Image (tube, rainbow, N blue to C red; front, side, top):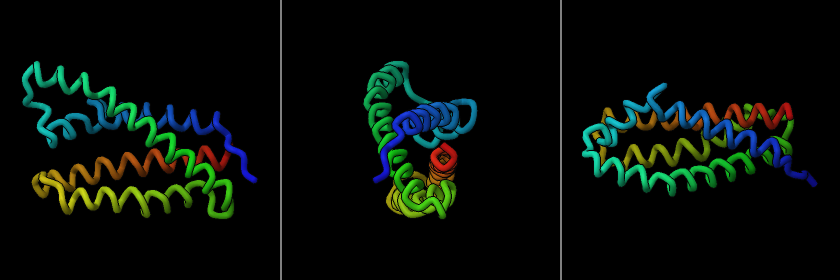
Length: 139
């Protein structure tokens, strides 16, 4: 039976959080992301309300990151021949891309914004899952 290496999982969750802060922040794609969602033209009151509700978003993202890392960890350890990058890419292609694709199909953004959102989110999940897969493979 494979036992979980919770230290490795926690390290991955912390790294995913740091990457997410940079990815969706002004360092990388934050300005585009804010524009797509219309957050760049908000009043001060609306911005404060959004900032207060962000604690729930961060909590859900933390849970999502932990569960994804946990599943990826066991996938990598169960099939080491596939290596961490192969397992991470397969999970990204099989889970993240279909979910993001449905947002493209059913989303209410303009066509160009849909694709920007898809590429930004898809890129984030690809980078963080590949990093997690690599860490789990070598740890």
